Image 1 (cartoon, helix red, strand yellow):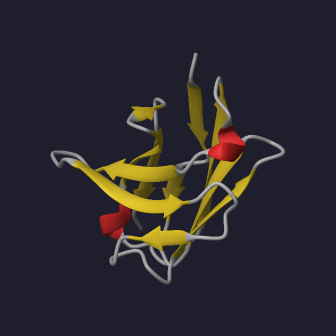
Image 2 (image 1 turned 30 degrees about the horizontal axis):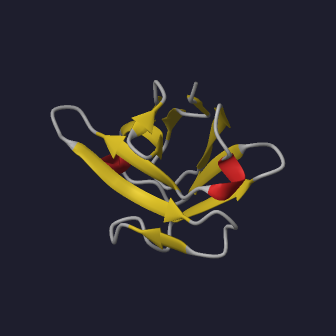
Length: 112
């Protein structure tokens, strides 16, 4: 059974940083692409970033490019999202995604 657990969110000031984690189990994590999505209140699900199995290839939504860094530790079955220079519009619930399956998400609120 696929199990994804996101963590690391919280309240952060504009310009601040936070690192999200996603602990994965129930599938061959080191062999699959992974993605991060987010959903702001009243909005739809939005793709944020992508990483290939080895971590050698990453892609980002334009609004987060240069500020967010996706990475993974295949030995720990964990996906990360380092979020820097945060803006109020980054406030959302963040989900890691394995072929459409997601965890419960972790809330990131950017506010002064």
